[in-house]
Image 1 (cartoon, rainbow, N blue to C red):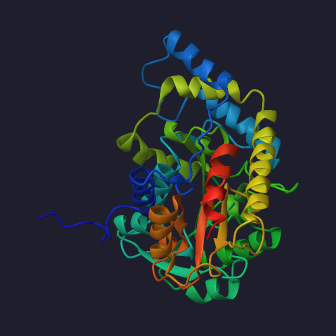
Image 2 (image 1 turned 30 degrees about the vertical axis):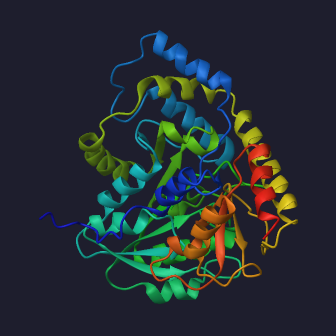
Length: 380
């Protein structure tokens, strides 16, 4: 019998809820993928790259033109200069980047601080690297970081901390004082940071995304992980990238060359060209904010409530306590089967979940999809 590297409890909740939605023909606001098309121009660029013969292996670190375009984007939005040759690597998605970053930095027995609720790949990835996750709960009120609790979780074995900004599933974003606290923690305890920033371009209400790359003490100790799927509505492409200082990136590439080696070549060409007009990324944030506002306005007609609008990402957590006292997983299953709307229970993002009566909705959907869901939820 094969001994699993992670004591998995089975299939991820995202697969479970999407399958349940398909089975019961429910409106799927669970898994985080848009149901509207990518920009036709981006699709044309992919087709053009295929037709031009860009169909063989790309360089292991990624197409130079794409890495240069990413460096220009980072300088434009984060006001930081990044070396495209030695500090950027293209990856087959962000989840791959997170795993490879952990495998690069961790040794058996190391501890990694994970802020919960947390994206569901973090803890399995840590276990697969022979390390130990140490969870610290975010505030149940506004999902802010309790820095006293984080400091209390640090031990002599702590090697790294994973952060997620903007946050999935809660839609919260970090303030500058959070990075000041993290900088002090990292310097005091000689820690590394894995920064999941895949929703970097989905920040709302006039705010700017703050990256770890902006903070000198953090930049030298961080692997920042990104995805093109979120900003370009192309989650099925599975193309992302990682940014790290040269010493860390060199070690990262030593693993990457034996895990994936290279990434989809024609799509790299297409994205490199598409990024020549960075204003498209600003339009993405504006469009998703409109969808957030549309969703929240229509949800006023239901008994679901929220403490504050999502500041980033394309997820909104909603309180269902005025509807049911079922645990959130049971409620989400009931809602899908009996009412025809699929969500994600927040407990799925915890190892030992509190009883919060919260579910996560994805609002990156067409207006008619949102309206179809609201119509079903109004009767509750």
